[in-house]
Image (cartoon, rainbow, N blue to C red):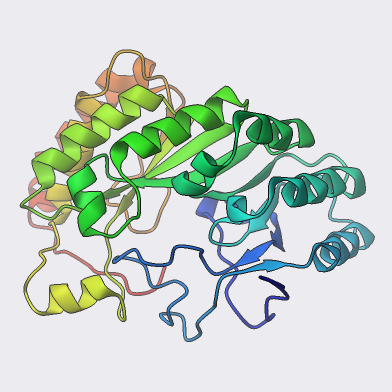
Length: 302
């Protein structure tokens, strides 16, 4: 389906793209079944169906940014998973960005593992050659059990395959991990399997997020019924600590805690070099009596 995206509806972006030029490419999410996500299901007051914008409308947006002298900024191709769109469509848009906007720092977008697996290696290389620098993909958990429970629509091995395809094509990869996604019952599996998947992929970057349950999502109803437990702040920090501790020696990713949901703000330009420091700081937080009694907060807007 090709259409316009109503201007009063949702255009999301990662925190790191806060000062980027936002160019909507797709609306909604082609999957839209994850139990922890309500982005396009009304949690922000509106719903948004999956759609691919008309390429001429996208180009008009790019022209407007060029006319208003938005040169030298990063560009984020917005939408839940723009990589679901046809490759030639994306190539045309990325090339147009590079032509019309000078000194673009990077071109990026969200990606879903299944969309990446549907594209050939040649298609992904075309996107890299056109100027796509980095994609942001939700790993969420390396546990296939948790991914299935959360209706993520993929499993650990598919994510590993997709991640490697992205990197082999010359595109940088930033993965998201959701701390607490397995609650108490699956916390150990969440930690060990997430570390395993990160070790297999060795992404350019991985970022931690702490699970917050939003009203209107299936997980909200389960939590309110007492069927799902949120981890405490110190338990979330322990999960992060154990994921870092279990990484293989090959992992030299950048690591960030760059989200309002997190209980620490640690970062590393190379976790292989900074692993000992990272663990030391996390241990100090875990052993801090103030952190141990810190009450849990559940953010409903982020």
